[in-house]
Amino acid sequence: MLGKTANGLFWMYRQLERAENIARLIETGQRIALTRLGSTEDEWRSVLQTSGCLAGYEAQYGEEVTRDHAVDWLLRSKDNPGSVLSCIAQARQNARMVRTALTTEVWEATNTAYMTAKDGLSRKVADRDLPGVLRMLRQRTGMVRGTTHGTMLRNEIYDFARIGTFLERADNTARIIDVKYYVLLPTVAAVGSSIDNVQWEILLRSVSGRGGFRMAYGAQMDPQSIAQFLILDRRMPRSLAFCTAKIIDNLGYLSADYSSHCQCCLMAEDMQQKYMRMTIDQVFDYGLHEYIQKVLGEIAAIGRQIEIDYRFYE
Image (cartoon, rainbow, N blue to C red; front, side, top):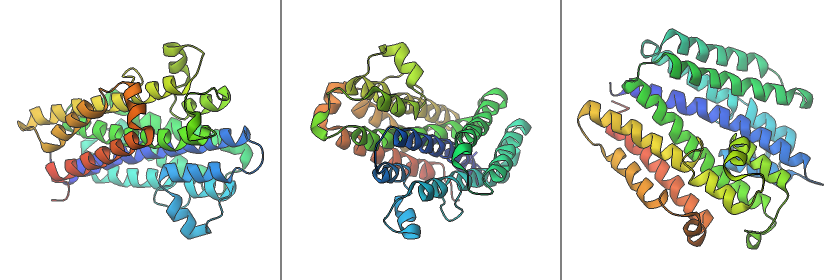
């Protein structure tokens, strides 16, 4: 199962994961803005930067960032290919292309996610309605993931779906760490100092990690423990180490199916060996920003190599 079908599945699940992640970022931006006094322009700029949508926003609205324009651009703008609505629409289009590879339940969940998002985002979302709309979007994309786990055969179709999901999730977690970590700290020199627990909880909420962190590390929060949890803790399903392990697992299943250990699998294993076996002290010694930038580069390179190895465009 190579070529266009693999391509459609891979990008369908990347786009669904991206839509959910952007909804989480909007919620995070809203929560952090509520804890701050004065202008929140820098916070919404960081949300746009994290999502990769800042350049498009500035081309549309100029350099001044406002909360209303940022939320609308991220949530529902058809001119923004990275908006939640655009991502879900693209995921549905890819699902239509690979309809015969999906179970009826997965197709119906994907189609329902699109129809619900289209209806809920048909007009600008009022402040009072935003939490409910974001919750609805997360639930609908989650239902696609749930029906995938519950109804799909564990074959190459499932493997490409999982690889797309975890590549996108790893990319999102890395970007959140890179941007949010320093936004929340007063200065780079303050790494390791105490900081407002409310804001750290918001950071963890953005990756659904607040409850898991408390179970694993207790109620006391500090920057090093949070970085450990989000980067290296394999129990955390959105950590970089967890996502990397799942990518390797599913690439390994594909390699077994096709009796060839492709270059993309070797690259993923190399990333795990180089960056996911470090201690958190070694990460900080290396430089958190430099470490994350290296990992982001590795994730992008693996994604490109998968397209080559499995002949997505032939």
